[in-house]
Length: 188
Image 1 (cartoon, rainbow, N blue to C red):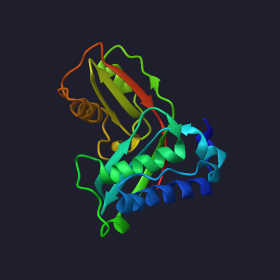
Image 2: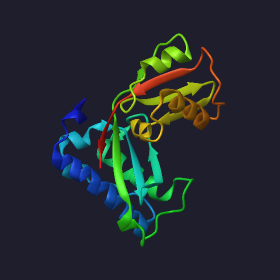
Image 3: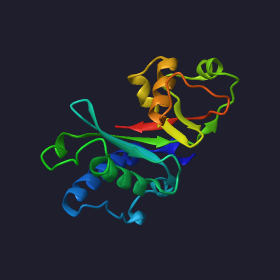
Image 4: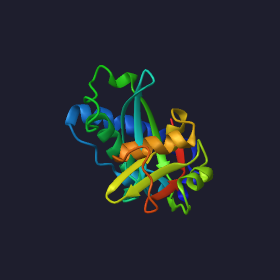
């Protein structure tokens, strides 16, 4: 995966681009369309990310995509804009608070399907702090980034909250539940 070779400059540009997308959104109410040729080859590779915004250590927005569909740097800009202005859980970021917003970008590595015989088996395979998870069951779907382990460090609690986020009961389990795990490269 090309993103494991991100330079410090690439990481700086990712954060600058996310900030620019929010500032651009304040003026133009849309995400900027980037001139891709002005970015490194690595940042032009197709990639997927989540952009998380925090204000005084409290979540202020988080939007991303699980599938790589466009150049990573454009994905960063689009999701930074969406996290600031389209996350339905929060009001739009305003010009006064924008400078106080802390931005972090999680670049997703390809997900791998987990195989397990029970919920206990699944829990035993998890690597707290490293695994991001995608849960799918009969039209229900949710994901947690690896950073969510900071708030939910116990595997059972992590899985229960993920089920709840998907719209399922915390106690629900079925042999038909599908769980994939992925790693991220975090930039903040």
